[in-house]
Amino acid sequence: MVARPHGGRLVNKVVKDSRRERMLREVEELPRIHIDRNTAVDLENIAHGIYSPLIGFMTREDFESVLDFMRLSNDLPWTMPIVLDVSREDAESFDEGDLIAIYAGETPLATMVVEDIYAYDKKEYARKVFKTDDPRHPGVAKVYNKEDLLIGGPVELLNQLPNEYERYTLRPIETRVLFRERGWRTVVGFQTRNAPHIGHEYIQKTSLAFIDGLFINPVIGRKKPGDFRDDVILKAYETLIANYYPKKSVVLSIVRYEMKYAGPREAIHHAIMRKNFGCTHFIVGRDHAGVGNYYGPYEAQEIFNEFPDLGITPLFFREFFYCRKCNGIVHEKICPHKEDVRLRFSGTMIRRYIMEGKAPPKEVIRPEVAETILSFEKPFVE
Amino acid sequence: MSDEDRKSKYTTISIPRPLYSRIQKLIDGKGFKSVSDYVTYVLREVVAMHEMESQEEPFTKEDLEEIKKRLRALGYI
Ligand SMILES: [Zn+2]
Image (cartoon, rainbow over all chains, first blue to last red; front, top):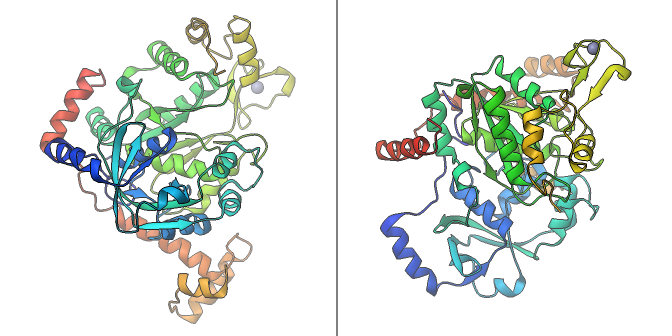
């Protein structure tokens, strides 16, 4: 039995067939706004039910409730604002109650009934969601760059953004069928924006010791310079799975999503997204969705205590490492040895080897995976 | 949050006084700020459990065939 969607019903706001044809003709006449790529990704995620129960961008009531209580106005857990910002100038072309067209470039993406047009305080948004108003925080900086007004209301999706990874993209309605076909009663979701090292593999395999299926769900979207490129992450996982996983216990598919680096709050959001994909469990490691030193290393685990009604069970992991004395991959709870016999999986160390065109030690990264990464001329975002 | 806001976002329910005292004793030093906090926590847990008992399929029979076709084509099943 896969997880019940958040709020009970999987949202589907994708318009099809003759209705779509008709609406595409009608959008020509509507007031028009343009959105950037990241907002368009949110829009698609709403339409495909990844953000169920949201059926559109947040109205003021939900937005404020999310900031203050980490819940929607109907009491459901929800930690990240999903908002559509418009300039005061653009907002002059429509009123509350109007149907508008949402465009990306020349493509009409969706229609939206404007239920609410409202101003908001960017510093308050930043402090409540990111626990800082420091403009150097990448998520905060994006909030500060938003337009001055937000508009909320239900959307209907007419067109999708081009998707370079369509072949790897499954929507919640599809993963739900897939998990059932596999006969999985329990499914653990793994969120990643990294090529897999052995530490990741052990976390996943430890979960698989008591969960039926593993759903590896890399986040594809704009990343920081120095991060692995999307195609590198995907190919690295394909190699890892082909060589080291029983095929029947794992599914790899991507989700388009822009990281906000909101640490604890974003960990809850990541869990809700995977619940909508059908996961019953979700892996939360060290400093999940964190950046810099804004959040404590296990804050993203502790926050789950506040949500007895989340409907997906978090699995908390500490760091795995290689221990020469244990002669294997272990973690704090099972290895009694000192730091000098331990080899940590550091992203910086892996990056250094790759940059020099060398494979990191086999205790850190599988040789086949290293080879795959090294086959790319430029594996990192510049 | 102002008192006005609080008033509009919270409501009161009655529970027997002995139960109130019992909860007070129970939560002492356990991280709950108040009996209300505790009761809200417990109710959310129980309500969510009851809500889990109903789930509607998000797809029709035709959808299901379409979905399986794509999953097969992509090699997932
Ligand atoms: Zn050891």
